[in-house]
Amino acid sequence: MTEPIQNGIPTVTLRPGVDIPLLGLGTWQAKEGEAYEAVRAALDLGYRHIDTARAYGNEEEVGRAVADSGIDRSEIVVTTKLPPDDADDAPRIIDESLAKLGFDHVDLWLVHWPPNKEARPDVWENVIAAQQAGKARAIGVSNYSPAQIDELIAATGVAPAINQIPWSPADYDADLVAAHRERGVVLEGYSPFKRTDLDDPVLAEVAAAHGVTPTQVVLRWHLDTGVVVIPKSVNRDRIAANLDVTGFTLTEDEIARVSGLGA
Ligand SMILES: NC(=O)c1ccc[n+]([C@@H]2O[C@H](COP(=O)([O-])OP(=O)(O)OC[C@H]3O[C@@H](n4cnc5c(N)ncnc54)[C@H](OP(=O)(O)O)[C@@H]3O)[C@@H](O)[C@H]2O)c1
Image (tube, rainbow, N blue to C red; front, top):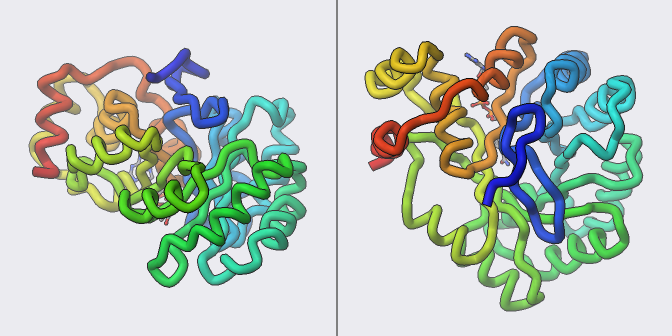
């Protein structure tokens, strides 16, 4: 169910109708000053999706970079996250995140981790309330299991639009993909490179076949399997290289071989 392309990158529609580019910029561990420059570079190069979190300490830099980019705010999808330690304070935390970002809404607000490893439907109720108040266009979770997602749905009737989890070829798990699809929850992966052996011969062969790098194969594999991916870089050349994955697609056989790294 991918949709038309934005700057060459396919998008997927999150409930209740938020189009999110399948490829965005991650900002975890971007040091002070780096996040601003990285987001400016990314937006300049054509990214329209930025992933931050209260815990990353860079919401202010991200918001300032979005404002200074000159690009209409409505064209950019920005995600931030509710830390589990602040889960009981969700109404205050969303207001603080918005103040730091300088926005009147975020496009996607996620519960960063299950608080104390529990689903906590009461926390999810507050996230739903923030969406109803217009403070988040779409809402979701991160690091939740399908069983924990079921708990949220059973208690509130509202499914998270997305679940952001560790994902890479080595993590590929057809059952987990199916579990998300069955629940209508979009799968978003994080740490695509850190979790990958970039010297793997399969990635090298597929990369050589297309005249690209193994990192580009990893990103294209996400796009070709409909998984959202948010590679982090603070280096303009690497930010550009990570977006430069629109000139090729993987064959069915190549997708199967790359997914096979998770078998
Ligand atoms: N929800 C969660 O719990 C959670 C957890 C972890 C991450 N995340 C999100 O996911 C994003 C991505 O994950 P991540 O930051 O853990 O890891 P990642 O994106 O897999 O890897 C980032 C590392 O790869 C390097 N890199 C980037 N592009 C490269 C390229 N083309 N070639 C070689 N090296 C490259 C970066 O260095 P340079 O910056 O120097 O280029 C950095 O050291 C995070 O930034 C964050 O937004 C979410």
